[in-house]
Length: 249
Image (cartoon, rainbow, N blue to C red; front, side, top):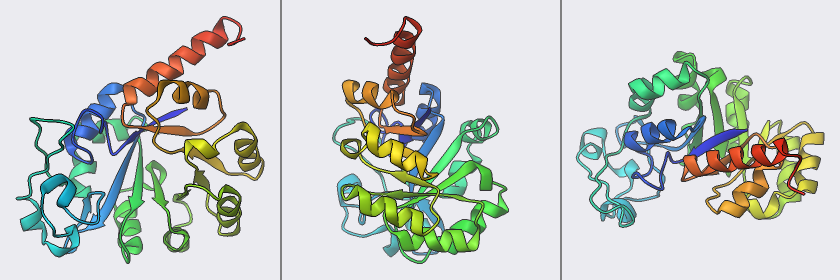
């Protein structure tokens, strides 16, 4: 089972920054989830929100500013006092020494499309760097994933959703998506079994609660997203130990 670091190790480092990704790998993550936008000057950058207000106290969006201005933006998180971060380009992430070493050792990059009109450029980026087998493209919008599959069918795609799980399962199957990502409240044994029987792989959205991590580890899913990769790793080892001793019952 993959431990997917949600925006990196975002429970202890500022989300979507190089320190968050490096820390996630150090903690044992085998996949890194990150959010992709486009700078005003066209570069692919890693940032989640529609604007800079939450992490930088500014009203502009990433798309409003050229890269030279984005490099000046200082990111801060009230939950992580004393830390500062900056917005990396996707190029900087894949070229980072720690990330690159992990990619050579089967790390997977889970790239969520957060803005319109970037699908083909993102696919070109992936192909040019020979990352087709190391990437999964995420989106809440099926249209993004359809464009990715049209451009490069070898890239795995993952439909994100919360609620209305039957509709989203049907949507994924109709459009050839290879994975689905329900939230934990939708990821019960019955639904996961239906998805697997239909030929889909399943990941589960951000989970930090210990009891929920333990429950999910018991399901035949591809991976779990967490802000705390080391916690997810401990849950996996805990469940493995239980089964080694003859099962939780």
